[in-house]
Image (cartoon, rainbow, N blue to C red; front, side):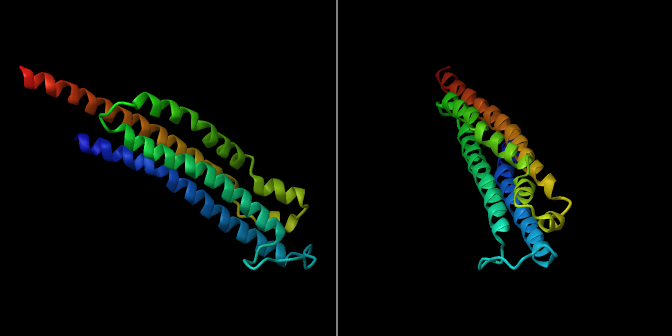
Length: 180
């Protein structure tokens, strides 16, 4: 039964990077759809399109989405590593927990940026109604993928810390039992 708790903790910890990648993938699909609508719309004046088929607005929105996903993804990978380290019975757990507490800042900032929806903000700044019209209806909800990943990792960290605490307690008890 102890192995299932360890596995559940690892799965929850792995959800963070997976959902950050899902956010990036969904953002890329949404930007591509919006660019197609922008190019087909009546407001398109034949401006530049790069080699990947994105307009300047598409490039800028994709970069913001990509950077947001990268920041959150790196924090999520760090949480995954910390969770694995917490499951061991060795010392140094306090430092890992403190650093993981600090890592919530980039995670929260990434979610905040995603929640403000930079794709829509930039489309409004560029005054591109065709781009806005081409965004899928689900695009504003992709930010919640980052929150779901963060919450899953928080539960995974708790499970990993509890697993490590049990392992440390068992390691401390073993030498006492050998002396008896």
